[in-house]
Image 1 (cartoon, rainbow, N blue to C red):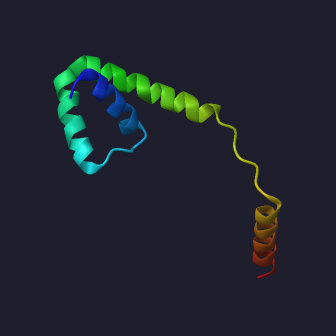
Image 2: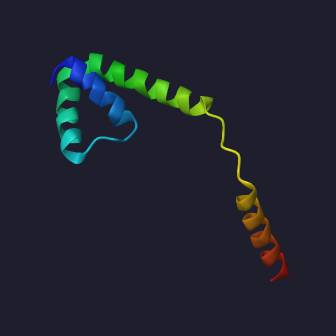
Image 3: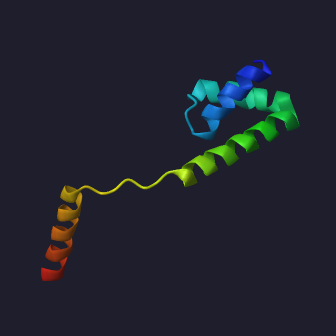
Length: 78
């Protein structure tokens, strides 16, 4: 695996999308590339966290709210 392939795999590794056989190959390459590889993985984690924090939560639909409220009312009545 060259470093470009490692970078592509690292992006998938960070989001947990590597298959078991890919993970083994990635771990071997991770050892091979040492600090340079670890630095790239660290950058990927930082970008992943920044992206996750930038997302707005989805608004709950009216149907979901109604179901939730009926569940709450049922609990109170029980």
